[in-house]
Length: 490
Image (tube, rainbow, N blue to C red):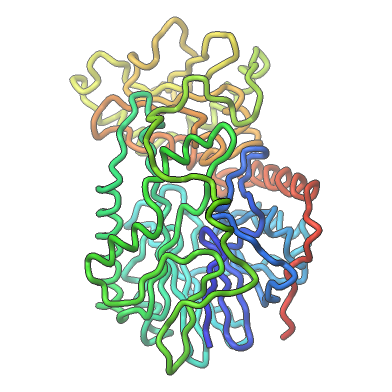
């Protein structure tokens, strides 16, 4: 017997006859590392912790907030060993140890043996594939040693030929293959918004799934089943408008588009509590588990794409909750910007500034700008001076027409990012900042290049640990009385 039960978002419980491995669990209703700005797991679930199976171990594939969630890990018995990606920062191991867990690292190429279940860590293939900030992701293959089934996932990075070839050395033919996607429409982030293309997005994702299936079949074999999941969250409060403007597709729509291409395998978009079940002499099938299930549909937040608000509201609020910034905050920001300027050397932003032609700039300055909003006061503008490798304050200038690209956010949020109090990707990046890029083909992905990568835990582990501590402290204040998930007896 081999079961893979979908817990929600990208969380799974993998089970053999004697072993249970919990992967990237989100066990609380909300998650996120910006206190007070958490996202909600979507669709919402009902988890009966008193019936939750005891587990042998937990695997955290990387330390993004939708995979490593201190609030969710607080629901686990502290004697459960937690395996983290070997490439994750010291902050990930430190917070787990402070919480009372034993944190162990699993690197690409290593095989973990847990009872009758083996887990092979795989390399993410960053050399040939754009990674955004998914640096420490650990793709993996888990399989039942008695041959009842297997589970493969490249998690949040592209599936490479090397992954499939290495997986084949351990398992002759693929069992369950998880395809994860976090595709969102982000055109509303731009100062000049870009419209969404739901049909084109669906076709692109379906074609990508077909290409992955073809490579799987060629290099490893046809899988017993493909499970499609991703963007398993919704926003709340003043960010609820994104539910109607960012999520252009649901997982089932992706599955429907892929099925139209004629892939001859079991293809599902599982809901929480649905499991893919395999055995040696039986085809893979979908079964329902009792310890977790989706809430009734009438209790789901509305997350149908409408496109009724194509741009970030002009009065968007700061993620940190504070609007006022004065001389002390400016001085602190300028000190931190020294590090950001040094980081930019050699990046794609740096390369674009060197490569852009004068006619492309159209009288704009050969630089990028940070526009930092303040309450009832003019924004601070900082210009990146490439030749001096520093950010220079500028006054009496319209940054949106004077620079080919830039980022606008609250000054207090930028300081909070530097101090490890909010998160760049979700806290500030989702509806609490704006970006512009006026030169076609240049400065693409500016927010990711400038903020998301810079503030990654692998660059700033001390700040990341401070953030994790704040999140865990908040989780303890609202700790549930439900029993913790227990350690499975060997």
